[in-house]
Length: 284
Length: 257
Image (cartoon, rainbow over all chains, first blue to last red; front, side, top):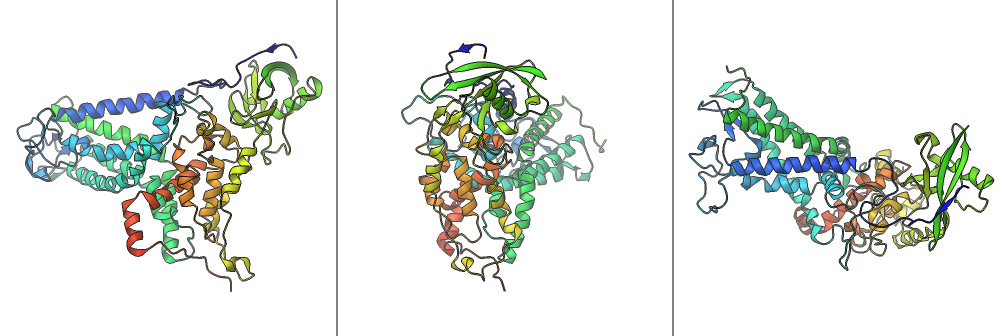
C-alpha cells in the first residue's frame, strides 16, 4: 500500500466516468454523420429545382433525385423539373403556402424521415450522440432537472411507437424507388446504363436490405409467434423470421449504407441536372 | 513478473476512498487473481465477492477502469503495462464493503414476474414434443448468469435511479423467456407496459454491450417485448385484426405419441 487519496467516488454529472478509452468517438461520429445528412437533406428539399435529368430527351426514362420521389405534384416552369406526366396528382396545388418553396420533396420526406427517426438502431445512435441518455455505456447521462425526471419513451417520446405505422408506408417507398431505378435505365425510350442508373438502383436495394431487417418486420414475419412447429404457417414464419433476423443483425450497417447512398444518389442527380457533372453512360 | 499499479475503492456506501496498491503480476493473471494477491499480501480485510472463477456464477461483477466487467474474465494483458488500473464496485447498487454491493433489489424484481403457467398436459408423461426451433430464442436468455452487469450499466437505474418504475434488462429478458415459451399460457404484456416500465428503455444497448454471456438483450429480448406491447396497444392494424377476429389462439407443439 502506498498512499490514500479521498475522492468523490462515482461522481454524478453529465459525461463523468472512470473509463479511459475513447468512448466519445462513437457519439462524435454519429453527430457528424447525422448532422451532415440532415443539413444536406433540408438543403436539397428546399431547392425545389434540378431534381430531374433526361438530357433534354422526351419519352420514357430519366433520372429522378430520390429525395423528390414519389412526385405527388409538379410545378411547371421550374428549371430541372420533371415532365408533368410523372406527377401522380397533376400540377402544383394552389393551397400551398407562398412562404414555402414549391418543392415536391417537402411533401414526401416526412414518412421516411419519421421511419428513420423512430428506427430502433437510430434511437440508440441519437440518444447517445444528441441527448446524452447516456453518451456511452457507464458514462454519466444528462441529468434531468424536472421533478418527474427521466421518462424514457413514455412521455413525449411515446411517439416512437409510430415506427410500426411508418414501416407500413416505408415499404411503398421501396417499390417507388425500384420503379425510379427502372426508369433510370431508359432515356427517350431507349435502354442504356449510366452512372446515375447504377446509383439509383443501389438506392432501393440498400433501402430494402435496411427495411426488411427492421425490428418491426422481424417481429411481424416471425417474432410474434411463440411456437413455430405448431402449423405450416408457423414453420414458414420461422424461415422468414430467420431471413429477416440475418438482415437485422446487420441493421446498423444497412442503416448507414442506405443513408449515405441515398444522399450520394440525390446529390449526383442534382449535379448532373445542373450541368456540373457529366453523366457517363451508354447513350452517348 | 512485472510490477503493476492499482487503485481500489475501500469503504462502504457512506464513506470511502481509493487506496493505491502495487503488486507483481504473472502472465495469464486475471483481475480477480490480482485482487486475491493484494488481499493475501497487503490488505487482508479487502472485501470481494467471488465464487467459480470461470465466468459462470456471476459473483465477481465490478467496474474496472470504469467498465462493468466480471473480474475473473478480465485478463491483465488487456491493459497497458504503465497504466494504473482503477477497480470500483458496481455503481447502481448500495456498497456493503469495498467491492461488494447489495444486489437484493434484483431478487425483489424477480418475484414480481408471474411464474410460468404451463399447459396442463405439459406436466404429464404424455406431454409435448419440443423442437429446437421453438426454444432457440428462450435458450439464449437462459444463458443469463445473473451477474447484474446489465442492471448496473442501464442508465435508467444507474444515473436516473428509476428503480421504482423499471425492472431492468435482466428481468426484461426473464419476461421475454416466459412470453416466448411455446407452452406458457400466461400474459404479462399489460404489466410489462404499466408496471415493469418497458417504455422507460430507450434502446441504447449498453446492457447488450456488457453481457459476459453475449446475450443480445436489446435486439432479441427487449425490442421483441416492446413490439408485443405495440401489437397490443399502438398498432392500428393488429388492434383492428384482434377486434375482428379476436385474440390469436395460442397453438401448441405436437403431442408425444
